[in-house]
Image (cartoon, rainbow, N blue to C red; front, side):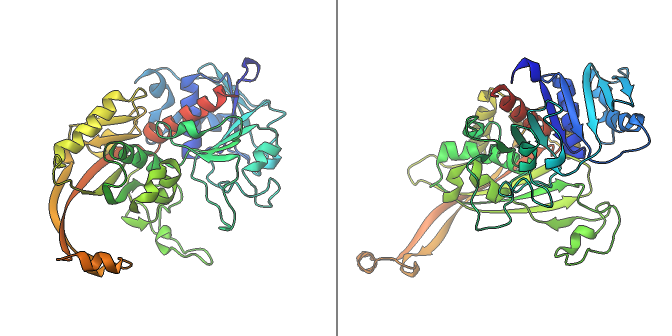
Length: 415
């Protein structure tokens, strides 16, 4: 990105949008930030400043930047121009338009936008779609858009457009082609953690030795949940989303398995199931990964220390320090704010168990009759090792927003 236009646009100011603002104020890669709120907020810019400078999970922005007890970092509040100066970075707020096509990024000299709304995630919709589209940002003057959520194509007959790509930093960020891709999904916080847990195992064992895998994410609450019980909307299919997040463990779904295949193609060869459970905490989540390996009769057995050593070495050799390996006994609060940690492997809790699985080859559908006749005994016993691996991640700032910030800067540097 040329120095004459070092501006970043941010669409949305929810959890990810606000923390993305914090990240780039701290990072100072961009000289100016333009944040689209899409509606009037409060009574004056002072109310926006109040929202920006403090956070119920991460504390004060000044403390985040300079440590506890630091002086306030919002230096100017300009109501007529709708700007704040935050630690030397000018931030302009737009309050008029929620539809991406109507946001005049060109007039703001914004070439790169991060859309954090979670609303515009279908890259197949045209820019003038009545409910808005991520392509509207391009129509409005942006050259590239980074989306802080997985793509979700509603019309299953549509294929992923050639100018759209999904990446996870440290896994497949090299798949981004600046000459071709204009819309980049940064996947999700859960997929980011999961990818960094699965990739080291695939690198060592290969997909054929991994018979199956499953995961459950024990996930902190999100803004889509209700503080108190309320009636569901018309046609609502999941009644649990309307139950109080403060009082319940809530079963929900995750698209992590589908997105994981986009960033690690080898996952197509591995049977995989992903589930999600929401719990009443503000941030700090956990992936419980269960992997079944086929043991080699003449090879070294897969044991707890084998798994831990793979993660220990991967973390040690990771130049960007995205994977952390911990031998401490952590709780979710210890992970909140953990810098650049896509995943923190809880090595203390890694478990493995090996057992023989009995299989009757004669009952396998499609087995060639000649092969069946050659078998003197169709019953075989296969040694299988099941490993249970725990990976922490701060689903807001510590993991996801840092990964999103890295993705945004690398896209900017390629423009």
